Amino acid sequence: YRPSNMTDQSTQTAWVEGVSGHGTGQRFFLEFEEPTVISWLDFINGYAKSHSAFKNNSRVETILVSDSAQNWQRVSLRDTTDWQSFPRNQGAPVQWIMFEIQSVYPGAKGADTAITEIRVR
Image (cartoon, rainbow, N blue to C red):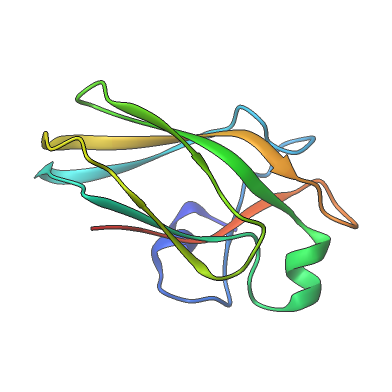
């Protein structure tokens, strides 16, 4: 359930935060080889490989997004396996972007919180 699973373009894999509890406060970074302007953030929330994997694991409800240009925004994700897109009207090129789990939709069987895919564009 490594971080690279979020960028492998597969709904059969996911990143799972891997700490005790729901992972509230856990952070992960995307770093870029050169300064990059990010206009949109796209997510597939939860573990989307099957209906049971999605419902049994926790999903992100809100996530704090910040970047190397000191911009930040709070994103509220829907409890669905559909792609969700959010504008990022910051304009400044960034070296990295950080995501911090703020709250979750609890899973039916476990506290592990998953994200299937993240895409920046």
